Image (cartoon, rainbow, N blue to C red; front, side):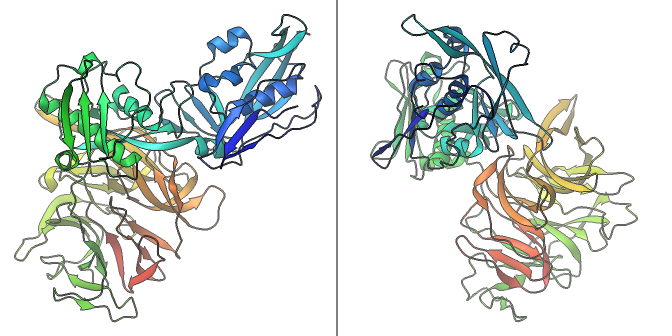
Length: 623
């Protein structure tokens, strides 16, 4: 039979064939799952006359990996009604691709005119109709049926097998999914804030067969469709309800000035200048994450073709998802329990009066104690968190029982916050390392098994507020890492002898005159790992995690997305016995980590790990 796809790539046409397949016995589908080149175009071919049920099923599964407009060839494997009803706006991702097996004894297989196949595999995720990625649970299995019937051929004669009942949406192997789709951050405003929040979704890398929209157009339309359900309670879109692209818009593209014109429908035609610029900011930051080219400006247009507003890249910085220094400090706790700062660029010489390390570490690294009680004062700490404006630091006392706050300036006074832990084993438990969000609030977990709590200090001062976390179900928080936008929280939680990563949504509501903060809808952040040692935010919707994969024995270091998908950056070089990791949203800055064997180590982009300070712990970037 002819193979179910035609592959176009590098200017050549490849068509492979295989022998006729029997109507019983084992079925091995022809899979494109080994292709990973996103530049390859795949076009399906129609079923051959007289094709056996095996060929129809294999051909249809293969045709789902194609780029055919409206999946026209894939629909030829279906009955007329099934072809009309089938929608390809949801994707089920399997680890190794679908494995169809014939079964004549199924519910409908008892009918002599029918034929049933069971399609099974190890599920990885579902990408829903909002394009949101939802990882499968490790114990999940996938098993669905495809049913075929005989019907008259296209010319009205003979009998041809066609599929009349099938699973919902597309069914793809993981490598096909990675070839066809890519993760994109779209942006919405944090509720009551002027700061943008990343909302990751998956879009097709090439023209979408269903909508015929190219990559940029798909992405813009996704922004207009609104935030995903998980993020929706804590963000807002500045686009009026019902806003869409002007009818017929299929191929948006940057012009030679790296500017994008976006024609909108009439629902957006009457918005004011200020709102329009915020709408444009949502698109501009989305496009910056989508393309390697720096987007110069976004122009929004009315339905009648007139200009609605223009926003330049410089103007958009007002709404930037993060407002960190261009060279954030790299901090750590030295062997004496005091906080020191490393030069961010590690270029060697330092005119600030710092001293080169002399304990066998990288001689180009310059460190110096921070100003204030944590550095040049007498206060000792075991962990530290520096506010995002780098004006204050929070530390946990050396005994793990008290949370302290102090300015990073000469003459600053140490503040003993009301946060304390009664953990009897505070040496191994007590208070977790604190974390600052972008709003200036300070977060910490009390790991006392008798009274576990997640606490927040508004603006890092005053009385702590106990934050309710739904979905823990008895698990205990071990680490807290707040996002720069303050609406997402990364938690390491221990349960059943394992520590896993969960991502929660931070909701802020009002109860009379009181503002209530809670964490809702915890979801797995690294579902492929069963023991996570450390985590840090490393981008607007990306984290870097240290841990062991399910069934693995060695420690791994990798990037993951907040939706639980694996980042395109993939696995990073490992280093022995990491206990802490620190990163920043700027991927030009090195990762900083603590190794039990090598001390404070750093991984600059495109380089290898190198020891920065032999004796030190608790590395931290602002946050």
